[in-house]
Amino acid sequence: QVQLVESGGGLARAGGSLRLSCAASLPTFSDYSMGWFRQAPGKEREFVATITWSGSTTYYADSVKGRFTISRDNAKNTVYLQMNSLKPDDTAIYFCAAGGITISLVDYWGQGTQVTVSS
Image (cartoon, rainbow, N blue to C red; front, side):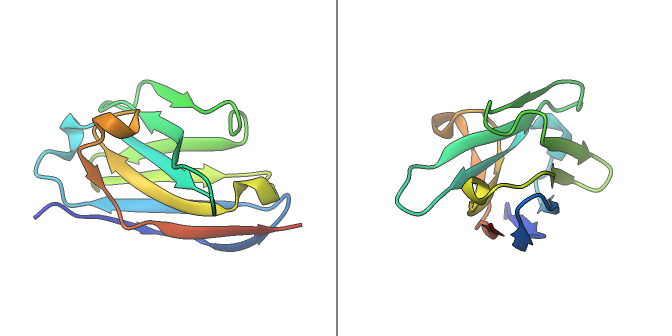
């Protein structure tokens, strides 16, 4: 059974940092591109960042570029999202995803973890 389990969400102040983790029980984790999406209240789910299977290439949404860093450890079947210089607009539920960089191409989703940034 495939599971993606996020952790590390919580409350932060503007300018602060949080680190999200996603532990994946995928049979061949290293075959998958992994990514993070987020959904703010009343808004559609949006792409945040993705990393290729080898970790050699990353892509970011313009809104987080320079502040967030995605990484992965294939030995631990885990993907991370380091979030620095947080803004109130980053408040959302953050979802780990396996497979694609667009919602339609994602094969598996995590259950989400809440990130709240206060001003």
